[in-house]
Every structure is written in structure tokens, then in C-alpha cells.
Amino acid sequence: MNKTIFIIDDDPLLRLLVERMMTVVDKSLTFIPCENGKTGLDRLNEYLGSSTSCIVLLDLNMPVLDGWAVLNEIQATPMSSRQNMTIYILSSSTDISDLEKAREYECVKKFYHKPLNRDDIVQILNGG
Image (tube, rainbow, N blue to C red; front, side, top):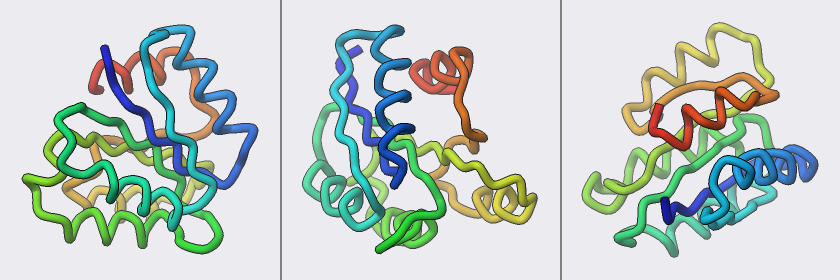
């Protein structure tokens, strides 16, 4: 598949588990783990415009810079710079307002609740 996966989440165990689950499905993936939104945004900015497609798995509640702030920055980026980027929100939040707010961002493909299962992983890797 030759995809790069950004895992932007402050939980190191979740980052590790998602990476391992995805590697079982596709061993060719490259992972860029990011411990907070600022680090994630910095690394994404370095990646923007790349011809390689990337998947962004974004937590909402993080220190330093939360997922909403990351989404605001990405949304403000020209579409041509993020055309190869697919963003999924991963959240433990069960608050319906978070799901509704996520729908307001056209750059968000889908909202997944933690923890992910194998079917979720396969859907994400297949663009669902």
C-alpha cells in the first residue's frame, strides 16, 4: 500500500497498539507517532505536498494542542496541499456534540471510537 500513518495521540500504549494492529494487516506501512497535537501538526506540515498518501489518526483530547486545534490548522491549509491526506478522528468521547462537531470539518473522513478493532483498522486502511 505504501502509506504513511500519523498517529497523533497522547497515549503511548494506544499508539503502539494501533501500530501493531495495522502492521498485521499491512507490513509495508510507515508510522509517524506523535505524542501531542503540536508535534503532530509540525510533522504533518513537513509532509504536506508529498505525493505519498497518508492517513492521520487524530485524538481530540491531548495536551499542548488538542485535536480541534489541529483540525482548524489543517482545514485552513489549501486543499491542494492536503489532497493525499485522509483524516480519521479516534476518540474515547461518547459525547454526541463531539461527533456533530467533527462532521463540520470537511477534512475529516470518519469518527471512530476507541478502542479500535480489526474491522475498524481494515476499514481505515481501505479508505472507509
